Image (cartoon, rainbow, N blue to C red):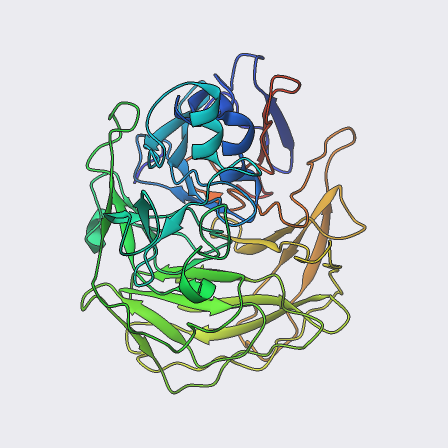
Length: 438
């Protein structure tokens, strides 16, 4: 996929650019694209609370960030949103319209009830697939077949390209869903915490208008229980060489589990689980390194320093195991940021052959680069890379999970959102960091 000329808004290698709406590059604020029957003040939590986004390299010439989230204590807004990148700018788009739980009226009461204002009527989802119900709980409400209710998506979203059965413009996959709908932990009998059910939004093109795309249920397989009772947060990562989406929880060790795109079923391997400690592991991130056929699990140790396990995921690694923790040459702190931890920011940059780590506790104005040695049992070299004077990133903290801390090779940069504004008091800001050597 040739990238063509770099967009005009991409900084020089090693530099950060903060792009504020209203300055000619970011065309709008996220709240501007919220559905008219949802109240933006609450609906923006689909981005801000416990939810993430993925880089979609198949969208247009330069790609897009595509996200989905919300859920318990956040919002009912189950829209899919995108941040489209162009040669001269970027703009938010609503790709999938949210469920009209209380209708499509634009009066303040309907908007607040749909979005999930404190005290609004309860919203429900079915207890098999976590799909939206209009009009009441299971047995009363009308199930919106194939439409997942808004969950905390954490780091558990994936983009599947056309070569793996995705749309020509990519497909957004969600294979695990937790704490859905604003009203409560899935708002159903027993308050189930987690649904293991696969849904996808296909993008046959990148030119559709507002709300032009839709969710679908990928598989009726919803009986998988290997991580059903595990407490979130979750991370997932698609490995094209295996046609699998791996799923990991942040608080417990379990055998590797995955969703197979070819067979459309979930499976638990018999290999060893990763290392988790009681006072670490609340935050979790999986990183795929295709050049090395590796999947990396990032959590924290008992001192809340970054820890990494590796797992081989080449075409013939049918039943892989997680390694013991690898040795890093430096202590990289991810001290807890409240009850939901300090979200880990790690991505792989193939162009400089480094892992890029951001949002380090107590060391804000820099990233760390981690090299993966030829011998994985050797110490992994870590290098602190400070930002130039006057440049900084306002990192996601606590329940505000990172959106887009992922290298986009089409623009040679990481396009990153920490959070967005709920009202007109502040313009949205997108950060662009271009790693060294790109």
